[in-house]
Image (cartoon, rainbow, N blue to C red; front, side, top):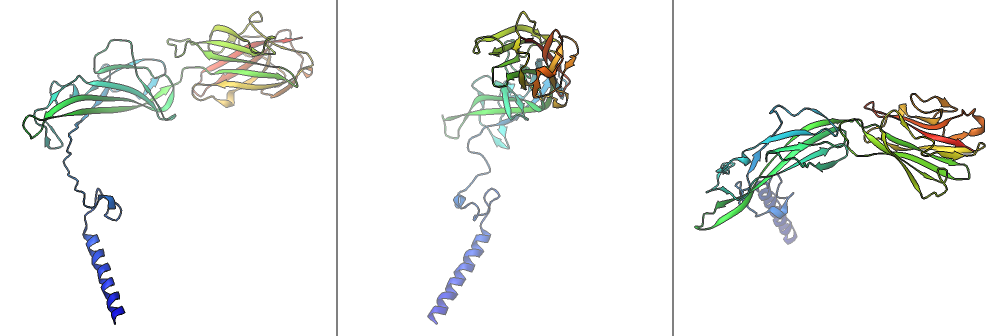
Length: 338
């Protein structure tokens, strides 16, 4: 009997506890079982420290909507509209009165461009003098999904219920506009050439200056390796070529030197600042330089035996590359057969 009475009391306690738990209020959408650390904590619907969040809208310079499509390297002047620029702070926030509010500083806007595809953000900056609610934003990288954002903080002070006491807080305002950024930069490709069981050489291009606008863009072509010169650690530079479909390194500037019976391996280096169109990529050896490449021997071959090719008087290595936006680069580098 004692055992049965003990079991009965235990069962009743479990039932009572369960009933009480079922009647306990939820905490922020969680039950007491899900958030036991909040049990006994009273959360007021009115925040103790007031930090007003103020809406913000972003417009183009003329007050119209921000274009959905921008172009890389082309600056655009934007402006933001928010009551955080008003002479006086808000007197209430979410139904709560803010006693005797006053600003203590000027607004501090921060503009960013977000590249959602790469999950990166870039702070906008300008050397131009513009109004406090404006910014010249230059998207530096193309993207199919991005956003221009503005965040503004402003220090303010308000009175506390106790006489003579005040509280410092910050008002915040932010907004964003989704945009895509068009690609106007051609690829920057080159080749790595190596002789079977022998030396190697490499050439590649680098946009210089970066983010140049207006067009055309310029690039430097760099060459190094034992097939380029006697010192494999030395780097030759051919400067200020127009980055595009007619990039020619002349024989007096640099060349790749190989023997007539060489078996060479070829590999593409470099790429594009956004998305290379691999279906249009072509490389190999061609006759002369300039215009449309006239291939000699196999195209896009990783291995070439020079004795199998009827080489012209002026052979060149070439790379013909396009990106998905249609920008094209064709680069020619002399091939010297010894």
